[in-house]
Image (cartoon, rainbow, N blue to C red; front, side, top):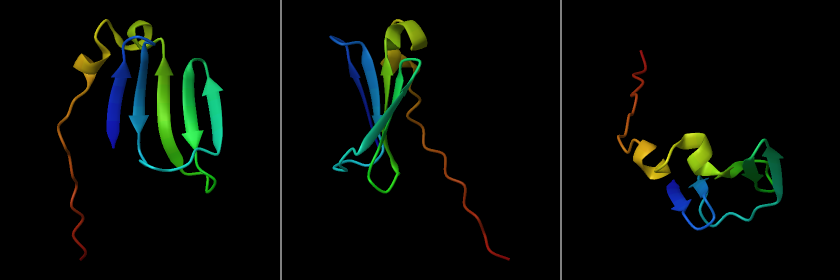
Length: 73
């Protein structure tokens, strides 16, 4: 996963599948969802990020990793 903020365009991008080819994009109220040909979510782009998230969008990102381990019984 890669999180990126483009200050000059005020776009925050979250990339889930690096290197995947985007086949379809759906925009809903300033948020773009990109999908590959298998309909897997490749990326999410947030337009006007400062307005939606705050003055410094990357300051809102929590880089902690939470993993739940499921133990089979």
